[in-house]
Image (cartoon, rainbow, N blue to C red; front, top):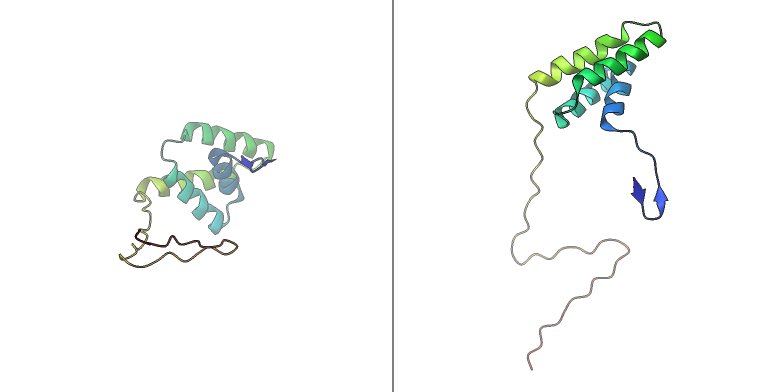
Length: 110
């Protein structure tokens, strides 16, 4: 991902789900469930394979249970909803952002 002129590596959604599932803490599992809800079309078989490989390398088959719990829970969860932003009423002006100068156009008739 690029921010201005800086290239910053980012983990994919798939990698984040794998990391969160194998960490297994309650907050990590909540995060994995949320990510699975946001990315409903993610390849769950591929996730299972990644976690299975990591569990074998760690000699800890219990790592798989975190992912299975997250997948099962996310399948029952409703689709995430975006919060609606309150609309400005007509006549209200937007506050200028910090560091910016607000320039208003004058309405002069000629």
